[in-house]
Image (cartoon, rainbow, N blue to C red; front, side, top):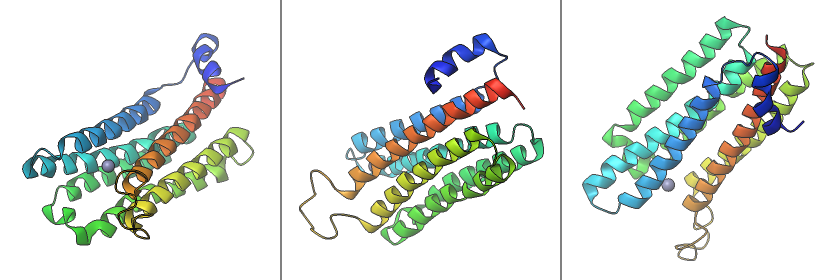
Length: 215
Ligand SMILES: [Zn+2]
């Protein structure tokens, strides 16, 4: 059965499990993309406005990365409260820390460009721990492998996105040729949307798994 259909009828057939981690991720993704659009739309208003908008933008990325952990961690470890709380607490604190760091004025300077990209990259990469842990616990479970496939694909989208952003690909090779279309920042945003969509598909697999099996 298709995941979307299964999710619509699951609440009617079985006792559904809580949806809040899935909705937290959707909220985080919407906040991130909305913050980015607002940032791009309004930052040309004035220097002061740009100052606030950039911060909103970084807060949006941190919110997206943090909330992306919620569905996989919650649904993988819902029967292991200790690890569930450990991973959820860790990524929430890391997200808050990243938002606070991004408020520092020094964080905005061009010298910190690579630092910024690595901070977000490191935040995303820490997701490898719960995913490996999930594989060890549920290696016999088809859903665990299915969602890991999606998670690897998402990691690739986000990883390539961060690389393109930090290395300024492709305009570094042909300066001036990509000023209107095809420059690194546009590619980066397309890759972020692709990553978030992949993660959404993985979230649907988790919901179906836990709706049907519980703990
Ligand atoms: Zn942007």
